[in-house]
Image (cartoon, rainbow, N blue to C red; front, side, top):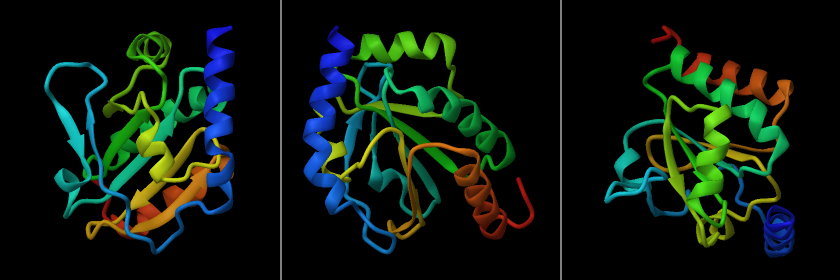
Length: 165
């Protein structure tokens, strides 16, 4: 029931944002989020300046997110120079940690428990991902997860990193 309420609250919060989602060419909104593992480690957009970043928003209750995690792990294996940060929008870290028990990650994880960053990025749904260039501009945005998205992203990464790892 708690997951259903969290999902409903996020959907209501994101409804107006779906109309005016962040677009390709926009500057990525800055952020400074705590690492999902807790402690004092944080993740900020500034720390990725000068590097390509795949920024993914996910939640433990999101079905397509279960398929996107193996894909992001494969991206990490194919292109280690691509930085990947997956941001959980779960209300608490324990739900996200439980998700990770069956969906391990080889990439950085952060927590946006209050949904403030999700609101800044104007997410239309879960998962939503952004490919951000070294200057901090959004070059690709995708809501949901499917094979067509995966193929499109991999083709774009082949152009960015033509020689592979």
